[in-house]
Image 1 (spheres, helix red, strand yellow):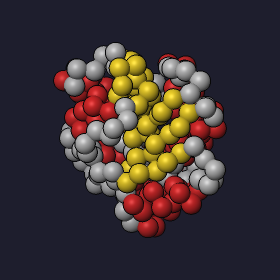
Image 2 (tube, rainbow, N blue to C red):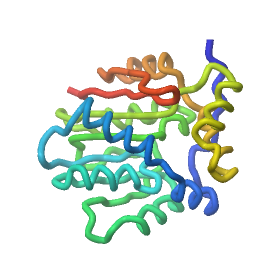
Image 3 (cartoon, one colour):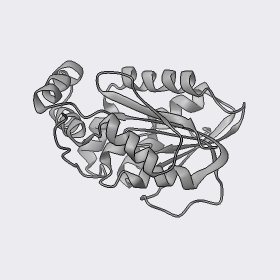
Image 4 (spheres, one colour):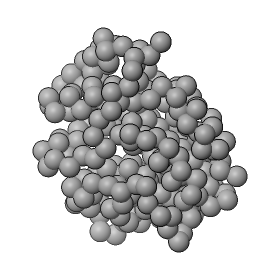
Length: 218
């Protein structure tokens, strides 16, 4: 039986925290995200509109833009501080547009062909906000790929994961990683969430600390 979830703040606003996050080495998990997205979904065509929900400093958006140059990407995040860093790190001639949006928010005029999200879910006190946004912002051909942390069975396991994957990181990142693990949802909880949202998504554990939910809206 998993330990009880301990929520954490929904937004990353502190300048030092944001900069530490932007400077951190996420090569392994972010490469894994892109590989899993390509394996599970590919893309729905050579061009389209993609939405990166909770884009943070924009690394996943930039990786997607490089891998799929025909696509246009909206990166959405609730933290102006994080988006300022994302804009600084993104070339001016990019296909990415960043928007400050605090969820829940009204659906935009454009509905998306692809919606992806990395590590937003565990920040949300109400996980239904993410799934409702995905449902309401999708077009009828939209493909979905959500990856997030998986809550460990106990605090001992959470601390061991921090030591394994963040031993050389600054204290602020080690602290954030631990508390993000404690705030994460279990795969069973995520399955219940997508059922409640009436989204036909598959939920899979893909590593010792990550879970994905993916599929088509239609």
